[in-house]
Image 1 (cartoon, helix red, strand yellow):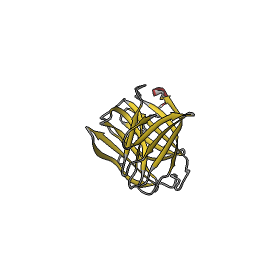
Image 2 (cartoon, one colour):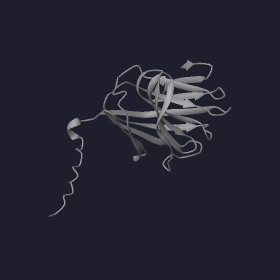
Image 3 (cartoon, one colour):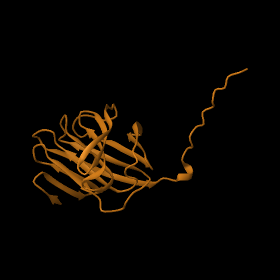
Image 4 (cartoon, one colour):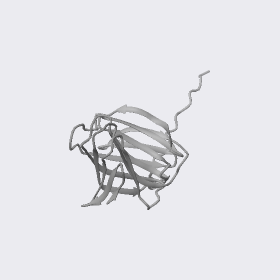
Length: 184
């Protein structure tokens, strides 16, 4: 168990829990290994004590606590993607409402991320939400975060993490579009 003024992080019973106790508190946790390049990952997420505006999600291809991609999911059913560089966030995908994000207490969802080179695809319960491209980081560590928007606590459990390598030979090739030629 790790505790700060903002809350605590704990691993137990095959799940990792971030518990935000402070008003407008923010907690992050980065794995120390392995460094991931091209991969597909899935993780089950169970937010509880989650209020509208609270958020949680994944830190991807992180170099450290100040540099990473952050996939944000809110308790009000929205999602977005940011690149955080030197602690400053740049929007890569603006807010989207998703019917796949269950709302209310004890909601479970399965987040999936596919990353290859500068290409990224994001899934919730097997349904693609959006894709993005960004060449800044092509490998890094995995992490989790939780942020309380208001004065109430937020707890998020992450479990059943699975990470698989991507076989570059199995990647689909680009579809060649025929060119239009004028007839004589």
